[in-house]
Length: 169
Image: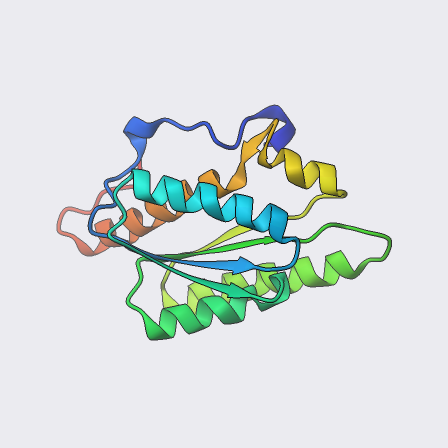
């Protein structure tokens, strides 16, 4: 569903698993820092709100480096999920297509290879205003959505190793 049709910060708090014994990593791109740091703050606050045991954060130069940063976190910490936060604004050239494809592919490959949920918290707007609208503006904050996704994916992973497997909802 397009974010223009919903507020990214709204969710049913009663439907979120308890994160008290979960550890999370957050990788934040420095490029477009006024946007990525707003996403990070909302993400970290949401993890805290749901009781995350630990949050390990690193900052990388840009969104292209998010998969590498996530790899470093996974290999150096025992984490239940990693959240990648970035913002690639379209601009005047097609650079955004190459970066977005590489980042999405890298995040997907990393999650499959490591069996650790890696969440795509990257904005891919056409312009800065669209990014601001999704980083605490009129459409809420995608950082909240990324945190909720990480909690749910970590809980699903844990539930599959427990007796009497349950689905994620």
